[in-house]
Image 1 (cartoon, rainbow, N blue to C red):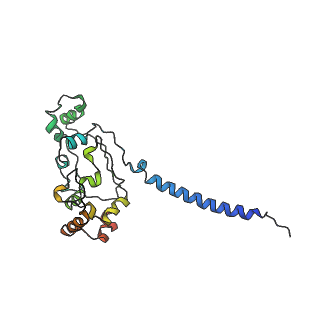
Image 2 (cartoon, one colour):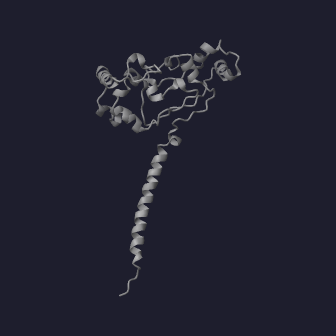
Length: 219
């Protein structure tokens, strides 16, 4: 009996199957790559603000401590956005007629808060507490980057789950002396591994199993 299909049909069938698998895999890799790209995570992208507040000027040049504006960072889950009164403590005298700062003055006169654009935005299902990290010795720059060098604040890290988990699995490299938590220029020394382990014991850092438990961040 004569063959219905040409012998080359076997090759074409195999090629089609493997090509389909390859294309599906390629599409999956592409989707994952896009999901982790700065375009989706908003990493390294500055936000347009009602007033282009410069951390570089206020923190880097003037040396203003983080806690002057972010007053609840040591006691609350949120760092806190300063009220307009905090701005006016200085700008009622400094540059008090500059057109650039008119939105600040108008906010103070009208008692209406400025609608700042949130830069570090976590998903609603992820719980993050600033105070526990600060009080365990994790510095501002560990998560937020060198804000003292940012004319406009941007998200320095991905804020993806993997980024958080990497630190929770090995927190010692991020632990610093308590008097350096708000220091912008702190860098880990050659003995950081030893110091980190010491800090972890002294500050009763939870075990890796506890730190990576789902309920730690998803409540």
